[in-house]
Image (cartoon, rainbow, N blue to C red; front, side, top):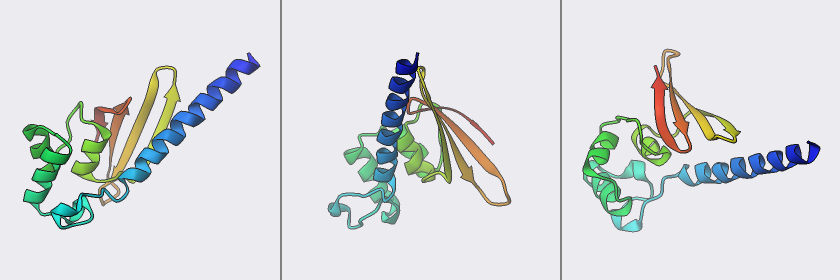
Length: 127
């Protein structure tokens, strides 16, 4: 019993540290120099469209959603970050079922929006 607990704890810490490195990678949203900017947010709309199509391989419908600030069920964490930016808070639960995340976006006037992810895919939200 004690050994199983220790192994589970090590696995959980490993998974969390893996995801933490992934979020650090998103912090600046770098783009190739050929776009004339160092970060995604500095691109104009046409450059963003080209970057998302050519570099990320997203479909036209996903690109349109991202550029219009829309999130949809099934989007990846990265697609949501391109659409809404980085969340203000991330709450993560790790278990045998996988990784469950709640992202919190604060939108002024104390209103918060919550996005829910299961294993890296958007599964729901709450306004």
